[in-house]
Length: 128
Image (cartoon, rainbow, N blue to C red; front, top):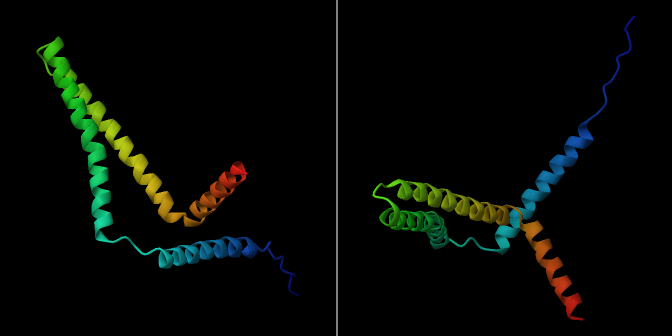
């Protein structure tokens, strides 16, 4: 005689929900990409320039401040090295912050669109 088998709980609806959500998100990204054409090569070059300058400028300012302090206070290059590292750290943080915001804007167009719609609604209500 065969023993009756006990069936485990079915977790398929949960997976299908997350999969359908994932598919809907991909479809929304593709539709957004079709509506808003890709900026092209010049946009990418400009992006690299902005990231490069956001790192280079604080680093150069840190070096300049360090050289000036070394000339005023001591003959060693201690302040130059300190402010070189501080400027480089600040520049990398600025670049990382900026790139993460751009990445979020590119990969969450629905959230961005909803936020823009809500802000327009708030401003129109405030103007009344």
